[in-house]
Amino acid sequence: MKTLLAFWLLTVLAAAIEPHMVEQSDPSAIIPDNESLPLEPVIACWNSLDCSMGQIEAMKMKDRLAFLQFMARWKLGPLVSVNQFRAVEGTMDFFIRKSIGGQKTWMSYVNAAVVEAIQRGAAISLDESQNTGGNPAALKWADYFDQRKAGKLMDRDTHDRAWALAEQTAVEYGIRVADSKPDIQAPTLREQRWQYSTKIYRMLMQYRRTLLWLIKTAFTFTNPSLPMASEAFMDWFTDVTDASSTGFLADVVWRLCALGLSWDGEEPIQEGQAIFELATDFWEEFQMSKHLNY
Image 1 (tube, helix red, strand yellow):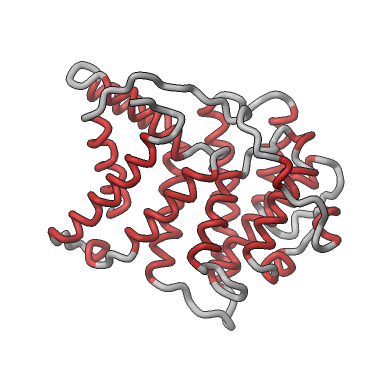
Image 2 (cartoon, rainbow, N blue to C red):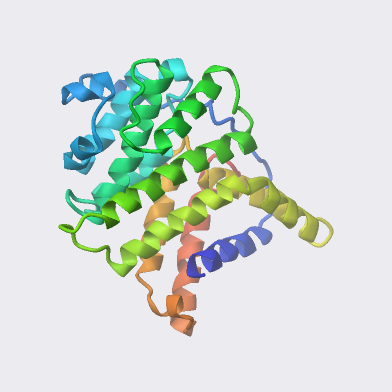
Protein backbone atom coordinates (compact mmCIF):
# COMPACT_ATOMS: atom_id res chain seq x y z
CA MET A 1 0.00 0.00 0.00
CA LYS A 2 2.75 2.41 0.93
CA THR A 3 4.67 1.81 -2.28
CA LEU A 4 1.53 2.30 -4.35
CA LEU A 5 0.92 5.56 -2.49
CA ALA A 6 4.40 6.74 -3.39
CA PHE A 7 3.77 5.97 -7.07
CA TRP A 8 0.46 7.83 -6.82
CA LEU A 9 2.20 10.88 -5.36
CA LEU A 10 4.65 10.82 -8.24
CA THR A 11 1.72 10.87 -10.66
CA VAL A 12 0.23 13.84 -8.81
CA LEU A 13 3.53 15.67 -9.16
CA ALA A 14 3.45 14.94 -12.88
CA ALA A 15 0.11 16.71 -13.16
CA ALA A 16 1.66 20.01 -12.16
CA ILE A 17 4.33 20.00 -14.87
CA GLU A 18 3.90 20.76 -18.55
CA PRO A 19 6.29 18.63 -20.66
CA HIS A 20 8.07 20.41 -23.52
CA MET A 21 9.45 17.30 -25.14
CA VAL A 22 9.05 13.57 -24.82
CA GLU A 23 11.85 11.41 -26.18
CA GLN A 24 10.72 7.95 -27.18
CA SER A 25 13.24 5.17 -26.53
CA ASP A 26 13.37 1.73 -28.08
CA PRO A 27 14.46 -0.94 -25.58
CA SER A 28 17.12 -2.08 -28.06
CA ALA A 29 18.59 1.36 -28.72
CA ILE A 30 20.79 2.01 -25.71
CA ILE A 31 24.07 0.10 -25.64
CA PRO A 32 26.31 0.05 -22.54
CA ASP A 33 29.94 1.11 -22.84
CA ASN A 34 31.63 -2.15 -23.83
CA GLU A 35 35.05 -0.83 -22.89
CA SER A 36 34.08 -0.88 -19.22
CA LEU A 37 32.75 -4.45 -19.21
CA PRO A 38 34.76 -7.46 -17.97
CA LEU A 39 37.23 -8.93 -20.47
CA GLU A 40 37.88 -12.34 -18.94
CA PRO A 41 35.80 -14.86 -16.99
CA VAL A 42 36.63 -15.17 -13.31
CA ILE A 43 35.68 -18.86 -13.26
CA ALA A 44 35.29 -21.31 -16.15
CA CYS A 45 31.51 -21.60 -15.92
CA TRP A 46 31.17 -17.93 -16.90
CA ASN A 47 32.36 -18.74 -20.40
CA SER A 48 30.43 -22.00 -20.72
CA LEU A 49 27.26 -20.45 -19.25
CA ASP A 50 26.70 -23.36 -16.91
CA CYS A 51 27.24 -21.92 -13.43
CA SER A 52 24.97 -23.62 -10.92
CA MET A 53 22.80 -21.55 -8.63
CA GLY A 54 25.06 -22.65 -5.79
CA GLN A 55 28.14 -21.36 -7.60
CA ILE A 56 26.46 -18.04 -8.31
CA GLU A 57 25.22 -17.71 -4.74
CA ALA A 58 28.78 -18.31 -3.51
CA MET A 59 30.00 -15.31 -5.54
CA LYS A 60 30.21 -11.90 -3.93
CA MET A 61 27.65 -9.48 -5.30
CA LYS A 62 30.30 -7.49 -7.17
CA ASP A 63 31.41 -10.69 -8.90
CA ARG A 64 27.84 -11.53 -9.90
CA LEU A 65 27.52 -8.05 -11.36
CA ALA A 66 30.76 -8.60 -13.27
CA PHE A 67 29.39 -11.94 -14.52
CA LEU A 68 26.23 -10.28 -15.81
CA GLN A 69 28.34 -7.63 -17.55
CA PHE A 70 30.60 -10.33 -18.97
CA MET A 71 27.55 -12.02 -20.48
CA ALA A 72 26.41 -8.70 -21.94
CA ARG A 73 29.76 -8.17 -23.62
CA TRP A 74 30.56 -11.64 -24.87
CA LYS A 75 27.36 -13.69 -25.02
CA LEU A 76 24.23 -11.61 -25.51
CA GLY A 77 25.12 -9.86 -28.77
CA PRO A 78 23.80 -12.66 -31.03
CA LEU A 79 20.63 -12.63 -28.91
CA VAL A 80 20.09 -8.90 -29.58
CA SER A 81 20.14 -8.41 -25.81
CA VAL A 82 23.42 -6.68 -24.96
CA ASN A 83 21.58 -3.94 -23.06
CA GLN A 84 18.58 -5.88 -21.78
CA PHE A 85 19.72 -6.40 -18.18
CA ARG A 86 20.94 -2.96 -17.20
CA ALA A 87 17.98 -2.77 -14.80
CA VAL A 88 19.24 -5.90 -13.05
CA GLU A 89 22.72 -4.37 -12.96
CA GLY A 90 21.27 -1.26 -11.32
CA THR A 91 19.63 -3.36 -8.62
CA MET A 92 22.83 -5.32 -7.98
CA ASP A 93 24.81 -2.10 -7.74
CA PHE A 94 22.28 -0.94 -5.14
CA PHE A 95 22.87 -4.17 -3.20
CA ILE A 96 26.61 -3.49 -3.25
CA ARG A 97 26.22 0.12 -2.09
CA LYS A 98 23.91 -0.88 0.77
CA SER A 99 25.77 -4.11 1.68
CA ILE A 100 22.61 -6.14 1.03
CA GLY A 101 22.46 -9.69 -0.28
CA GLY A 102 25.69 -11.06 1.14
CA GLN A 103 26.42 -14.74 0.66
CA LYS A 104 24.22 -17.23 2.52
CA THR A 105 21.39 -14.73 3.01
CA TRP A 106 17.79 -14.85 1.84
CA MET A 107 18.26 -11.94 -0.56
CA SER A 108 21.40 -13.57 -1.94
CA TYR A 109 19.56 -16.73 -2.97
CA VAL A 110 16.79 -14.75 -4.66
CA ASN A 111 19.34 -12.74 -6.62
CA ALA A 112 21.32 -15.86 -7.53
CA ALA A 113 18.18 -17.38 -9.06
CA VAL A 114 17.72 -14.26 -11.19
CA VAL A 115 21.28 -14.38 -12.53
CA GLU A 116 21.16 -18.14 -13.08
CA ALA A 117 17.94 -17.88 -15.10
CA ILE A 118 19.41 -15.27 -17.45
CA GLN A 119 22.57 -17.33 -17.92
CA ARG A 120 20.78 -20.63 -18.59
CA GLY A 121 18.23 -19.00 -20.86
CA ALA A 122 21.05 -17.51 -22.92
CA ALA A 123 22.85 -20.87 -23.12
CA ILE A 124 19.67 -22.59 -24.34
CA SER A 125 18.97 -19.92 -26.95
CA LEU A 126 22.59 -20.09 -28.15
CA ASP A 127 22.33 -23.91 -28.41
CA GLU A 128 25.18 -24.28 -25.95
CA SER A 129 23.12 -26.23 -23.41
CA GLN A 130 19.64 -27.51 -22.64
CA ASN A 131 20.15 -27.54 -18.88
CA THR A 132 17.70 -25.38 -16.93
CA GLY A 133 19.23 -26.24 -13.58
CA GLY A 134 15.68 -26.69 -12.33
CA ASN A 135 15.09 -22.95 -12.69
CA PRO A 136 11.71 -22.48 -14.44
CA ALA A 137 12.65 -19.00 -15.60
CA ALA A 138 15.45 -20.36 -17.79
CA LEU A 139 12.99 -21.48 -20.48
CA LYS A 140 11.14 -18.17 -20.29
CA TRP A 141 14.37 -16.27 -20.87
CA ALA A 142 15.29 -18.69 -23.67
CA ASP A 143 11.97 -17.91 -25.37
CA TYR A 144 12.57 -14.19 -24.79
CA PHE A 145 16.01 -14.42 -26.42
CA ASP A 146 14.65 -16.49 -29.31
CA GLN A 147 12.07 -13.80 -30.00
CA ARG A 148 14.70 -11.06 -29.84
CA LYS A 149 16.82 -12.96 -32.38
CA ALA A 150 13.76 -13.19 -34.64
CA GLY A 151 13.29 -9.42 -34.52
CA LYS A 152 10.34 -9.56 -32.16
CA LEU A 153 9.68 -7.86 -28.80
CA MET A 154 10.77 -4.52 -30.22
CA ASP A 155 7.66 -2.58 -29.23
CA ARG A 156 7.51 -1.46 -25.62
CA ASP A 157 4.35 -3.26 -24.48
CA THR A 158 5.13 -6.78 -25.71
CA HIS A 159 8.76 -6.39 -24.70
CA ASP A 160 7.98 -5.33 -21.14
CA ARG A 161 5.39 -8.06 -20.64
CA ALA A 162 7.79 -10.81 -21.70
CA TRP A 163 10.70 -9.36 -19.70
CA ALA A 164 8.65 -8.91 -16.53
CA LEU A 165 7.15 -12.41 -16.75
CA ALA A 166 10.57 -14.07 -17.04
CA GLU A 167 12.01 -11.95 -14.24
CA GLN A 168 9.05 -12.61 -11.93
CA THR A 169 9.33 -16.35 -12.53
CA ALA A 170 13.00 -16.24 -11.53
CA VAL A 171 12.29 -14.22 -8.40
CA GLU A 172 9.50 -16.54 -7.28
CA TYR A 173 11.77 -19.54 -7.79
CA GLY A 174 14.53 -17.84 -5.83
CA ILE A 175 12.13 -17.14 -2.97
CA ARG A 176 11.09 -20.79 -2.86
CA VAL A 177 14.71 -21.91 -2.76
CA ALA A 178 15.62 -19.34 -0.09
CA ASP A 179 12.62 -20.29 2.04
CA SER A 180 13.69 -23.94 1.91
CA LYS A 181 17.13 -23.23 3.38
CA PRO A 182 17.03 -23.99 7.12
CA ASP A 183 20.55 -22.72 7.71
CA ILE A 184 20.04 -19.10 6.62
CA GLN A 185 18.52 -16.26 8.56
CA ALA A 186 14.96 -15.32 7.65
CA PRO A 187 14.61 -12.05 5.74
CA THR A 188 13.98 -8.93 7.75
CA LEU A 189 10.61 -7.23 7.44
CA ARG A 190 12.29 -4.45 5.49
CA GLU A 191 13.78 -6.94 3.04
CA GLN A 192 10.41 -8.63 2.59
CA ARG A 193 8.76 -5.29 1.89
CA TRP A 194 11.44 -4.33 -0.58
CA GLN A 195 11.18 -7.64 -2.42
CA TYR A 196 7.39 -7.32 -2.60
CA SER A 197 7.82 -3.84 -4.06
CA THR A 198 9.82 -5.29 -6.96
CA LYS A 199 6.75 -7.36 -7.83
CA ILE A 200 4.74 -4.15 -8.13
CA TYR A 201 7.44 -2.84 -10.49
CA ARG A 202 7.05 -5.87 -12.74
CA MET A 203 3.25 -5.64 -12.57
CA LEU A 204 3.50 -2.07 -13.85
CA MET A 205 5.58 -3.37 -16.75
CA GLN A 206 3.09 -6.11 -17.55
CA TYR A 207 0.02 -3.85 -17.40
CA ARG A 208 1.64 -0.67 -18.67
CA ARG A 209 -0.74 -0.10 -21.59
CA THR A 210 -3.85 -0.67 -19.46
CA LEU A 211 -2.65 1.74 -16.76
CA LEU A 212 -1.79 4.41 -19.30
CA TRP A 213 -5.19 3.98 -20.95
CA LEU A 214 -6.93 4.46 -17.59
CA ILE A 215 -4.92 7.62 -16.91
CA LYS A 216 -5.64 8.96 -20.39
CA THR A 217 -9.35 8.22 -20.05
CA ALA A 218 -9.56 9.93 -16.68
CA PHE A 219 -7.50 13.05 -17.40
CA THR A 220 -7.56 13.78 -21.15
CA PHE A 221 -10.10 16.60 -20.78
CA THR A 222 -9.28 17.84 -17.27
CA ASN A 223 -5.48 17.68 -17.46
CA PRO A 224 -4.23 16.63 -20.91
CA SER A 225 -0.56 16.96 -19.93
CA LEU A 226 -0.85 14.26 -17.25
CA PRO A 227 -1.18 11.23 -19.58
CA MET A 228 1.83 12.41 -21.58
CA ALA A 229 3.96 12.97 -18.48
CA SER A 230 2.79 9.71 -16.91
CA GLU A 231 3.81 7.69 -19.96
CA ALA A 232 7.24 9.31 -20.07
CA PHE A 233 7.70 8.74 -16.34
CA MET A 234 6.64 5.09 -16.50
CA ASP A 235 8.85 4.49 -19.53
CA TRP A 236 11.79 5.95 -17.63
CA PHE A 237 11.63 4.00 -14.40
CA THR A 238 10.72 0.70 -16.10
CA ASP A 239 13.41 1.05 -18.79
CA VAL A 240 15.39 -2.19 -18.52
CA THR A 241 18.26 -0.65 -20.51
CA ASP A 242 18.85 2.05 -17.88
CA ALA A 243 20.72 1.06 -14.71
CA SER A 244 20.47 4.53 -13.18
CA SER A 245 16.67 4.73 -12.95
CA THR A 246 16.37 1.24 -11.49
CA GLY A 247 19.16 1.85 -9.01
CA PHE A 248 17.55 5.08 -7.90
CA LEU A 249 14.15 3.39 -7.60
CA ALA A 250 15.66 0.57 -5.52
CA ASP A 251 17.18 3.13 -3.16
CA VAL A 252 13.95 5.11 -2.80
CA VAL A 253 11.89 1.99 -2.10
CA TRP A 254 14.49 0.76 0.40
CA ARG A 255 14.18 4.03 2.32
CA LEU A 256 10.41 3.79 2.03
CA CYS A 257 10.43 0.27 3.46
CA ALA A 258 12.13 1.54 6.60
CA LEU A 259 8.87 3.31 7.48
CA GLY A 260 7.00 0.59 9.28
CA LEU A 261 3.66 1.70 10.65
CA SER A 262 1.76 2.20 7.43
CA TRP A 263 2.23 -1.41 6.42
CA ASP A 264 0.01 -2.26 9.38
CA GLY A 265 -2.76 0.04 8.22
CA GLU A 266 -1.85 3.31 9.97
CA GLU A 267 -0.92 6.53 8.19
CA PRO A 268 0.69 9.01 10.61
CA ILE A 269 1.35 12.49 9.26
CA GLN A 270 5.11 12.22 9.63
CA GLU A 271 5.18 9.13 7.44
CA GLY A 272 3.08 10.83 4.80
CA GLN A 273 5.59 13.68 4.77
CA ALA A 274 8.48 11.25 4.43
CA ILE A 275 6.78 9.49 1.53
CA PHE A 276 6.15 12.81 -0.20
CA GLU A 277 9.81 13.79 0.21
CA LEU A 278 10.92 10.50 -1.33
CA ALA A 279 8.46 10.94 -4.20
CA THR A 280 9.77 14.45 -4.77
CA ASP A 281 13.36 13.18 -4.88
CA PHE A 282 12.34 10.54 -7.41
CA TRP A 283 10.49 13.05 -9.59
CA GLU A 284 13.45 15.45 -9.57
CA GLU A 285 15.72 12.62 -10.68
CA PHE A 286 13.27 11.89 -13.49
CA GLN A 287 13.29 15.55 -14.57
CA MET A 288 17.06 15.33 -14.99
CA SER A 289 16.75 12.23 -17.17
CA LYS A 290 16.66 12.28 -20.97
CA HIS A 291 12.94 11.50 -21.19
CA LEU A 292 11.60 14.97 -20.39
CA ASN A 293 13.06 18.43 -20.77
CA TYR A 294 11.25 20.96 -18.57
